[in-house]
Length: 538
Ligand code: G1P
Ligand code: ZN
Image 1 (cartoon, protein in one colour):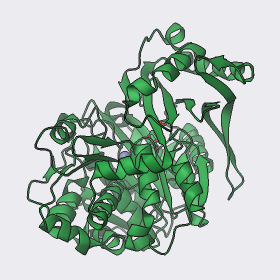
Image 2 (cartoon, helix red, strand yellow):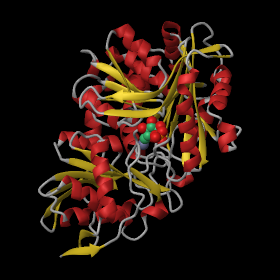
Image 3 (cartoon, protein in one colour):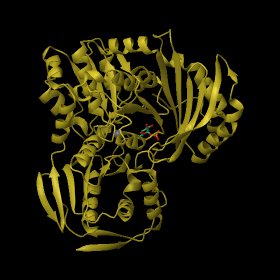
């Protein structure tokens, strides 16, 4: 029986950089999740359509997925494809949307944010492109959330999601699928699995940290079962609702255990971690860290070593805040190059129109047009493939890269928990100052151009502004933007890049120090926020 439930709007349901992301306690308020889902259905008209659903297994995933299934059935959805037990990584979901030509999908995740009753929960909505919906759609959904008066739900017992196969939920078909199988097939079609198998057979060692999140079972299957990495190469491999208390963000701060292993004297040859929903990656060698911006540049430079790309790639794109390392690679290879606002959705049009094959962000995300999301395990396999074919180490590959292309020393400084009005004022004040900054000298830097970044999408001609960039005459940069994923308050992100041609062995922190001082000063960070230093540096 379909229940029509009366409800009233919540005013905070606007999607950010990656869907709707809020505290678990906010999402579990009465009708909060239902309002948001019904608003999506009101916009997309789901009658007769097919969607993919799954999540990263975090707290509230189990409850939310039941609600979503019952609401889909009540709203006339023809078929749902759901990962067994409600699990699907973000990249696996994108693959299933594309492979089955479905009308879109829902991933229940707050990505790399902590989970649990005091952590975060979130919902990403993808269209038939396999990528997250555009701003136009998310604005329409927000409008619906502000006017919602009722939602539809099927009044039935909870549905069992542990057995593979097809069942009927009212008039709707529900297919429970293996969340891993299709993903593995896709990876086997891109990478040289036999070369990587040989690498492991010859004693190569790795440590993959799944951070108690969704990629554990994918990683065990691919790295240990198929490729032959020693048992135990994958750590924290069982997904847990609170990620075992970990903050499942693969960076030097939150993946500290892995970093300690990789910087110890008996470190394995290769280390990597993924985030909560499996779209982010961090790459490490023995006592060596590859910055995400360098990662994108190195993968792009080595595309020809990978079977799936050996016939050439269209081009590459990065988020504006990401370092310019990949721009120099694109120039050398004479391939297309694009800079977009932060958020994976901006890459989708470029991939669909065959302008790019690869894309990436400084925030530990890289991917290619095999799907329409970033892909953590893809990046790890890409490195394993490079290492298997070249016989070189991670450090060797990276150092040779710097020698060839110069080095962009790069760090991101996050100032967290700023009251929203103070953060907005800071950005506004900085924006007003921009014209007066052009051609001014600050220590050893001269500002060539200070501007609000504007992206004109070459495909749909939409125009989006995102952050402020200060470009120095020597190729160095300072970028300021406010996060679009914080679940409470505002986070100011300051991205610093120092381009260096000769001094290739310094530490990034030393190299960006002068830029940090300039950034603090021109944005009046301490005066406005009271913060003398960043909360997190990645
Ligand atoms: C952050 C990252 C961005 C990424 C997004 C979703 O967004 O900076 O690169 O696409 O998470 O993973 P932000 O909080 O900066 O808006
Ligand atoms: Zn993620």
